Image (spheres, rainbow, N blue to C red):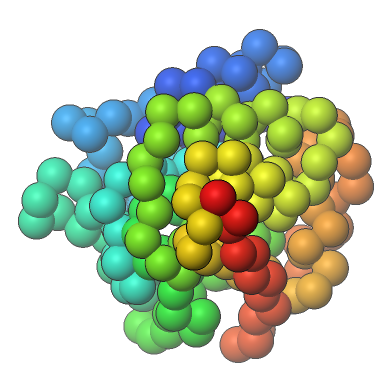
Length: 200
């Protein structure tokens, strides 16, 4: 990380907006192109783990994200961060509902990634979310603040967001070029987390 590379996006706004700020969008695979192999062990280093920032926008559950049905990526078949990924946004229902699924065997999905940002509850796929998120990320808000603030704009009261970090210091990360980023933390079986209750 640190070389001002890439944004992956399921929403065009993120890649475009961050790209306009000097980042290099590496790829953008939509509904008909995204596959579980882009996120799971094997070729993930060419895709999700070959970038610094990643966004998935689609259907989710407490233990998977879905592409073309029934194609899913189970979190315990992923190893994010052992190559390059620092921050991933899972814009799908219940994606961070289960706190320790990202440290579940046979593989730890959190394997060097600093933060996993998602939903404890259901979530709406609002067209402006990617734009709002990118805007906060490149205007010196922390990654965690950007996720919470961007979704609070569009999500109704009662939605609960969760960001899961490898350790407490990860919650202070900014994206590269916008503020401090901690050194890659030691990978262990523990996690830290932050909850946010949308105000509607």
